Length: 321
Image 1 (cartoon, rainbow, N blue to C red):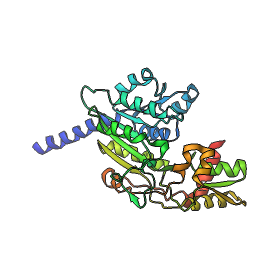
Image 2 (tube, one colour):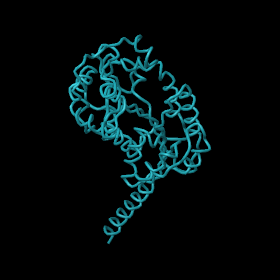
Image 3 (tube, one colour):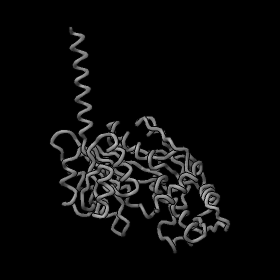
Image 4 (tube, rainbow, N blue to C red):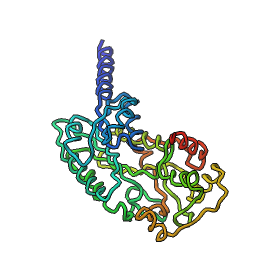
């Protein structure tokens, strides 16, 4: 009889834990953006209630059809997001503000979130940073390596530390590499060039390597970060591929049937066209993902951009239509 009640108690405890997890409330900024939308979907697929911040009412249907609850607002208006954030157990900041005010807006948003004091259990706050804080790594870099950030993101580590050092939230910082797959991101630069301008260009020598990750692997890492109860931790989010920029561009050239030459620009030359973005696009990086693998029980499933370039090119074309 004692054994029966022991097993029964274990069973009911597990039910309660499952109920708590099922009713988790998640608030995600940038929920219609590239990273944020895929992260929002993986939490909803796993049964959680997901609230997605979007500034544009035109994006409401994109959220609704994926069972994500729209929150109209922006990270610069605290009255538009604080009421929802207070009610949620997990907050994920994946919004990117492409303007001269990006640093100021990011700092102010993080300040507001890290000022929320929970009455009972601390909220988890996952902040999306990026690999450009490392600069040129000159070998493999882990989460404790020296930071030599690009000028474009020089401000970012200060914000990372605000997240990590907060006593009000369980803060975690994720540093993704260049994200690829589905509708794509930075790799779209070359696809757009070929299709729309019949040209291909590279900033730097092309011998440099980008740290990369498939968007689904990244979303999985976010989910496993929550499951692990991580706090005050940094995680590199990169796959195991080590393709050079030349290899990436030549694979795009081949799959698109491009017959022209590939033009190479120095950082200085490119800066007149793309500004501060030129520097990080020429970085040579090798990031260590072993911490995410060991602490989060995470494994990247995708082989790399070059390995399946035709799939990614066709997906990009389909997402354009």
